[in-house]
Length: 314
Image: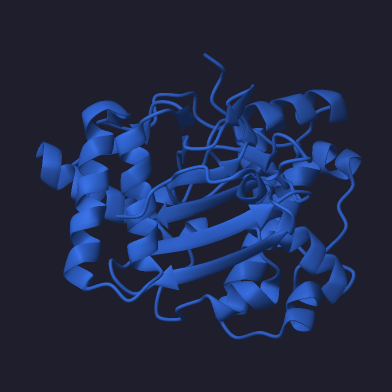
């Protein structure tokens, strides 16, 4: 079984920024990322999937639900769908090496429902960073199995064991709709306005005027209910749209033009700050018969992934 040991001092130092993203065939609705970063950092973003991973070396840091959390070597990181977060090495000197899994909401709900016997069960992780040696080993083994020649039956067993362990102590269930306040109409209208003009420059004053609010009040309201400032949300929406177009086989240069980036280089820089890999590497990791885990509209349970209110700290 793959371990999560720290190794010697040299293996602890993450010297080069590199990452690999791929979608796996079975179980369907699952993508994986392997990354080794020293200088790279992620801008505020969210996923239409669950995120769970293990830190193999160094330390990572994430700002999540209004707080900064540090994940040392051997820690497990857990992020819920639709929740805004960042990511970066906690120390530039050491960097961090980690492996992530991105299971779809449908996949997790199906397994949790089978375990708990609750058809409407909507599970959520309790904390973003946990110290659980068994879970770290399970996540590590599952990632290794999904990225190497391993019998499908073994992959399924490892996934089921991982979900069962999460259910026993690291998940809470929401049996009805999201209990948080619904998104106010001005925010909903503003997001529709931005999506309709995704390739156009949009001024904050024009956006606020469109919903009949002052720029200051509108900005505060928008960030309260999305976790992002309006211009950050717009760029995230552009990246999501770009990922969907890349899946359809569009050229990177064409995608840049269609999503409001000045050129291919501009899209590449910003895409990597959200996805972790440049567009070309993302395309190489795609399975075109699967829906993109970066596109919330393709997951019925995650249609509101960009609309979720940023959960308060606590």
